[in-house]
Length: 335
Image (cartoon, rainbow, N blue to C red; front, side):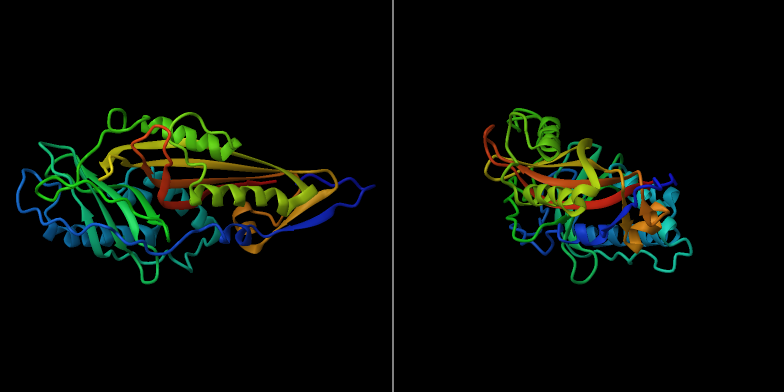
């Protein structure tokens, strides 16, 4: 750790990272404006309705075993990026903060799922579920896929439905299946890669590119407020730099009844606290365990993985909104 100048006493600045981010989550259960599909007709449903519970129970068994052992190889048998990379990073942080695994990850048990199942002419196939995974937690919206009838179902995105955010009515075909959309025009006014890039730019610098806007989205504005508070909390003790980037855009998308699209993508946020001369940051106990020190004299860098489900309106100048979001810390270094 760098030594402090002897002629100028360093001023301690307490930085309670856990408290700073506690107010960001917009949690709760959102009503799903669609009943379970009956799948009475149509070729190759991604999953028969009566098999949903069994598939999720099988996934839960392996997932809980992987979580209990913090086993990334076992996790990789049922998860793919962006979820896999986020959860593997979470294992590493958990192992650093709790090397003896005294507080193992909570047990996951999907309950009463609502399944949004498309039908396909062949493989690969995929479907989406909304399900509680633990009592008194938000419904979790997840995307599953498989490459063949014999292949296992793999989860690629897992994100929590936001409270007080209207879930879009999904388009259904005559048999009650949800309808697959492409992730670019004509189904979208702007390609989903561009929507994600615009969202990252808006969060990074407050300036979005052309296309459906997320500037008035409640989750986005709450995230911007939290990022602004980072600088307010440390005041003169540190300069704060925040940057977002797109890490993954899923090929899966669903049409909504109004002509819009429900899409899925992931962002990463990097936050750098550059400590100013004569100051040091005093970390709270939980953050200090991850950083390896309770006093930051030079810089602190955090990285967050963000998984999102976003409604994109049919109009190019329309207002988009985040339906579900999950934010996980995936890296922390300090000196």
